Length: 135
Image (tube, rainbow, N blue to C red; front, side):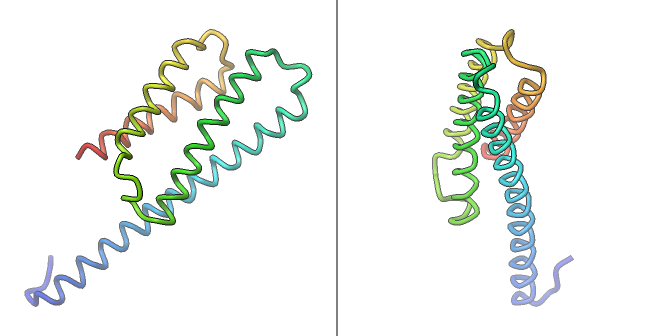
């Protein structure tokens, strides 16, 4: 419950907002770390096994890397410049969701289980982002 003093109320609200932003940035940094680690693992895997991978597998890995790179850039920008660095964030998330959904639909029979699982998890996260950004 807020105090009756308007100045104290504002300070409490400001602190509460700062805590929320801090928590969101912590989550974003963790997500950024996970994306960078996954990107690095895939790069190493491509370097070590590109000679035995099929052309489809290589293309799928490259597409997944491109998606990761976009997400990494987006998170870096949000962390560095704030939530509203890109006023079209909702449009971008929707576009990425639709593009990836098409990719999944087209390649589901050729995707390994782990890649499919991670991609579907990412799609679920995008759904949540879309709902959050619509509110």
